[in-house]
Image (cartoon, rainbow, N blue to C red; front, top):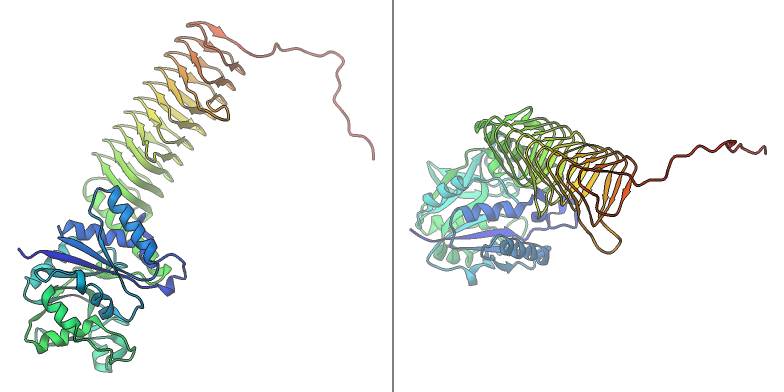
Length: 466
């Protein structure tokens, strides 16, 4: 098989985005546009990837280097187009680093939703011999280069600005993607001119050169327009975001996931689901998330980098932010509403975390409960512990963080402060309102608070007359 070298055009300024951020670094589904394109190229087992940068080149190149390194992948090669004198001029910059013996697959860094299968079909049409163009039929082709045919043979691509009235009525358009034998591409690039309305070097002009040289030019149609839609404005970015999310929602529903409303679902990473998973409206999933069998996610939850075991229920407005340490929720656990699980929270089976409870870098064993208005940070909580409303672990002394250990079957009363490092021994009870800064005895009641007193003859202060 002929090797494939991917060329990604990512030099444009993106003026209509009205942003200092390079256009290809604007995010769709939580990832920059160009990262979607690079991932698609990797799915094709390309020999190498060459990225053409220009506007914001340093930022684009730095991001792609860091992304490749973090993912254990080869860093792309980079060439710069300075100044930007058209698409043909952009690809001319690749000539010195493009091998002669392969197929050049030319992609756009701002067109994120093309499928690998669509590009593989384009490569197959090229077959190392033909110039293959990815095309699509549009009801409104304004702004796109028209495919001019003679029968089934493609004769030319005419840019919208240079097209005649009859040519502008053509509905088949060029998408900006092509597969072409690299040696022939180099020859045609050397013969481009800028004799057009914009004074630019158009890559599309190589079609006429191919026809002149007797090279067959063929079209490979995209299945749906959204695959080839690019991003030139915040409006278009938002439209593609919805299309992308609907694509992901449909894929999950085809696997058996029940989404209350696929139009109100956001996946900005990867989501693995077991059987009979239910997800309510307005939920956002980020990073890597897995949901076991029979998990139920209530409305308005945000879940990032977490593993939720079978039968767990996350009630409305639960916020899980796993980051690098991740969050684990055990089988049959009940979380929320309005709970917050931070990095390193590891909850065992049947744990209950209730409204306005925050857990950070802590483990809770089977059956432990913290149902109301509490904080557990840097703590180890045993089985069947009941952690009272308003209680906190004071884990930070201003310089260092220390751990709190609460052994099995402990009852912590309301409004307590456990000052770490401290251990509450098994079976003990902490009286409400206590500040505990020493280890307690097992099975005993520990109270650390001032004795209640009533002051005779005391009266409330009164406002002084002005």
